[in-house]
Length: 197
Image (cartoon, rainbow, N blue to C red; front, side, top):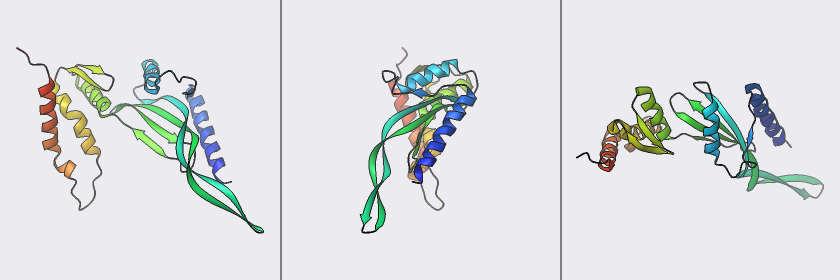
């Protein structure tokens, strides 16, 4: 079969990279009582570089993949392929980026080798506030308090809208209403802030 060599080559390349970088691949099945993001944050606490791969994890998860089944037609042999739910290995690459903070890329090791990139607007906003020297008190995925709430309110929405694809000759209503949406989000955030007497 053609696909297993691709899977094996990819797995070996990931293991070789982890070995060259000096860290072990975290088996999430063995750490099932711990949250993946919590494990990544623990590795981040020991990470000394400004950016780079912080941790690689692996997990067995369900994926839609193609599975071949042999069908004999007289003296001829055929294979029929259908898309099915399979348990496959996924690799999670947790990466620290100077702009986006900690995010991960999830890669399936089985055809069609799906890739998922997970960025957090809140983590991006926290990175921007750190760079600007604006103090804040963080929650797991948000803010509890911020020295400049007006600046904080616009940040996640603006990054999301700036990441939306642009197509030639098409108007993206979300992009066009970015300013109106940002002002609305800021006003909502300010309404939630405790009033000073």
